[in-house]
Structure formats: structure tokens, C-alpha cells
Image (cartoon, rainbow, N blue to C red; front, top):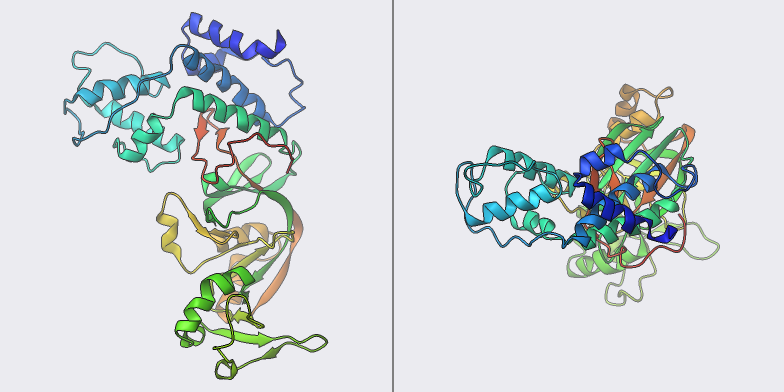
Length: 395
């Protein structure tokens, strides 16, 4: 009987006619019967929402909404408005009420759409654009499975994260600095492309480098930069990139661009290293955060800030670019360096490494469903298509 608990709860919920909020509020008992210390608290919070979405699935889910062809503003009447209203009521974004014109678009619907968009990682415009309609049309059964898969993933997340830690949730494109279970700093992040994915792992951030040089990784060198250089060798000079050759038993030696026989090199044969000088155009920006790991992944600043305006930020080659690197450095060096000193170092152009007063745990995770601080369930797009199978290995 125990393994069917969620079905039983789903049926009881439907019979009782509870909304999602009232169910979560009333459901203070531990449904699974497991000790709450076994897994992270998120597991048990999602467990309650699992029952709610199960109940919706059991009773047929919700109807799909067709493409919205007309611009919906307050007072506009359209047959799709009624479907939109019912769909927002399904997940309790809009309260059920008797109104004289249910096919009329209202301010309450705009507010409900904004909340839905926020909870699904979309831009909160209050407009039922194609991306919003696509998210509204995700079946309840799929959301149930999404929660179930994420519950399994939360099983692998450490209960004891440390008093202070960094959390990067790849599908949410955000970084958070957590202290004593409270978020003290949050910022946008850019993660790896779908073909150069940011890996899931945990490590310890030990030091920060200001005005870093960029030792260009071999994949980026051969696949991205070399084709551009072969078309125009001035590419390297314009971007302050130097060429080095290292022979076994010898120190690294810089090679002038005009001494390279560019006709003999290719993606398969390039016996050189490329290093970009520190500076305002450096791909790593002015700050680099180091947490040694097998993937050679780190966090860094970036000179290309416009990409943070995008909703789906999969633009890197695996490393994590962050929108407010100086703010993070200031927080991590609190008690050791003040912002004024950080800015003086950056403005000097000198490359400086500084150890953190205490190492900080870093968790690079992949959660497409979780419960936020307000008790609302959050869903995100499965950008790397990792949710197709249940996890078997812990972080």
C-alpha cells in the first residue's frame, strides 16, 4: 500500500475539492512516512506538490489553449480568453469566480499571467505570447513526472551545505550566494551551450584572480578561434592574443605571428598555445573565481553584458559567466578586502590572486523544479534534456 500513497492522497485531495494553496497549507503531516532528515528539505516540499498535480492528471488535466491571434488588452473580448481563464484557475493563479463576461480579458488575468511567467522562467509581461502559451500547454502529467524526477535529484543534494555556499542552477540561469539559509546575493548567469554543456558537480572556491589572462582551451582554440585566424591573422593582434610554444624540458616561448607557418596548421595540428592578455576586452572580464575541479570549469566576469538580457542564456563553452562579478568578489572577501581595494587592483591592470578567508562550497546543479522561499513551485525548461532519465549518480 505504501508505494501507492501518492495516488490515494491525490484522490482524497480531489474529493475534498482543495486548491493547491489550501492543500499545501493543510498538508502539514509527512505523507511519505520518511524521516525529514534523510533528504534535503526540497524533496519533501516537492512531494506535496506531486500529490496535487497527480490529482489534476487523474481527472483529465487541462485543455490546450490555441494560438492567441488578437492582442489582448483589458476589456477585450475573445473566445480564447475563457480557455485562458480556466487554465489559470487550474493551477490556482486565478481564483474561480462568477463574472458576467468570462470571455473578457481583465487586469486580474494580466497579473495572473505575470505570476505564471515568473514561476516558469519567462519574462513577466502579462501577455499570452507564444512562449507563455507553450508553457501553459505543458500537460499536468508531464509536470507530475518533472516533479518526480527532480525529487530523485534532490535526494543526491547534500543536507549539510555549509553555513555559506554558492548555488548555480543551470536551467534557472542564476547564481545565488547563500548564508545561514538566506540568499544574500543573487545574479544572472550564462551557462554552456547545448553542445558544450556546463557539468553538474560540487567543489570548493578557494581563490579569486583579478585581471586574469585567458589560457584559451583547446576546444575553443581549434573550433572557434583558429578558423577566424586562418581567414585573418590580424584577429590575434586585435584581441591581444599571444602565441606560445612549449617544447618538452623547455620554458614556454612566445612566437611572433608572422613566424608561424599558417599553411601547415589546422584543427588537427596546432602545436601552440594561445593566451589573451588581461584587459577590458579579455573574455574572462576582470574577475575569475577558482574552484579546482576535473572539468576545468570556473566562474568569471565578461565584457559582453548584453547577453544577460536574454531569457535562455546558453552561450558559454561550459564555464559560468556572471552579471555582477565585482559584487560577488566583495561579498566573498568581506573582512579581508573592501570594495575600494578591489577597484584599485582592477584599475591598476595588474594580475592579482587572493585567497578567500575561508573556502566556500560551490554547487553546480540542474533542477527544473523546486519550491521557492514563498512556497510556490517553480518550473524551468529542460534545456539539456537531462530529465528524460532518473539520476543514478550523486553530486
